[in-house]
Length: 151
Image 1 (cartoon, rainbow, N blue to C red):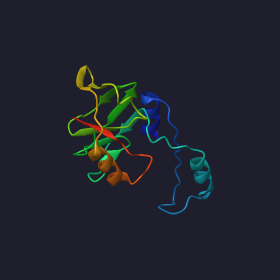
Image 2: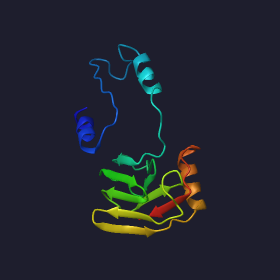
Image 3: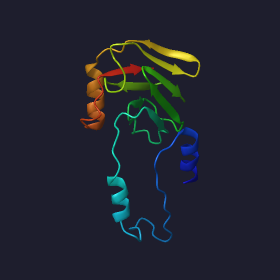
Image 4: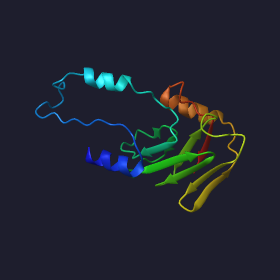
């Protein structure tokens, strides 16, 4: 909870609930699941957030929203989209950025920056490989990406 609050202050508001149950282990919470479901069902998923924070933890989880890493490391990646500019803070080696027309204007150049360095500045072409990669990874019709930038 302390770390989540720290990230909320540092990176901007996001909603979370942390409740500690002593002596429950992996059992049911004392007040049942109803408060959890009520809270969750009020939320609306945004499959294309403009601001993503991700610390890859497991080697087999390589996709997170519109990011993909080849070799997950326990290092925080922060990615922001502002118009057609994407700013990355954190490791960029082996990073792929998946895009579609709901996120950026693919008819114009997309700029990717890491700190003061410009890593990419060009139009991003339509890619069947990007579609296949994201469909295979997620099987989620709301998270299909038609273009990608490999860094």
